[in-house]
Image: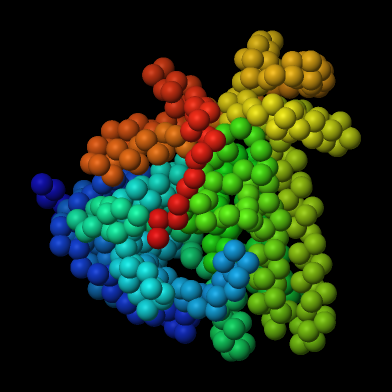
Length: 488
């Protein structure tokens, strides 16, 4: 048993104090016998938290929201949102709580936030609970995203509650402790705008500037600069998703952050065979959030943020619309630039290569990958060997050998850097069949497969003996039928 003494834990309530209209004081439901499933020790250290204490009975009570440090003010956050294109004026944290803010090692605040801590007044008929599998999924995939260098919320811990959660079948319950730069989202601004309280909207915008985009405060028009900064952050983020083959699955406006971090790993997955039409989420029956639609969707979501910000952009609405439209139009160029730069890096192309050379090469490659149903992750990793002279690992995954041979000749003529290819193209991502295998075992009480997969995705660029199965594509019969679920 740990003998760690209770630390003096300072949890600020900055959000609750700045925006009380959007912060409902609330307490987590009691958990009689919390049991730690996984703890992110490196993240705990970055937050100044003692890992031994977090494993203690008092620490576990903090991680499920039952130990509230002096001065803390847990709240359920209010927000609105478009869900699959349909507007809901009152969503909010239905099964979550913001415990407060901690100071990270970089000197910036981080939210300590719970999922699955019980019903709140925003629950909308839900039970407020979470199951072990979906919470471990968020832990696993968010750590993989972090290792890949993609901006993301982080997972501090998953704690079993001993409760039974009823979904399609009875499942063991859990609480996820999540860390984020903040939980401000497009839906937060939609909620503030819907109240008609311009002062609240202005305070929210100023809070977002101070928290995430402080340089906007010095701009001639700070609130327009805030919008421009969010456009830039989201363009960069979604380009990184596309480059990694990540499919978010539920890109509602309440899941679009102001910080530019990935949030909410519900029905997420990674593409196997490259196809822009790929959809995994069981509830996305129209394919709104398909892999290839993600840039268009995020621009649509940003347009909803622009609408919410209009009263702050200009006294005259038409002038405000013009300013917002100009900023939103810039999304396309920012996204294209980020994606093009990322693709050049994945292909190891030299700096300064003309667009009229690089762009056709990329476009032709993506068409080949789609037509030949080539695995997205392993193809790019194999390019490193092709750049060193051995093209067979690339050729063997194509049916149209003449087409890929012609493309390889064009690519090699540009002098690709093999080491650069290996630095940016991962060996390991959370392969969907391995994720499901690990979560099924962990739900049954065996965490060995989860721990092994976590170990692999935390070192995504390293080829290690004994880890070969973590780099292999899923069996074809698995990929053809794979569906993901939100867990609510």
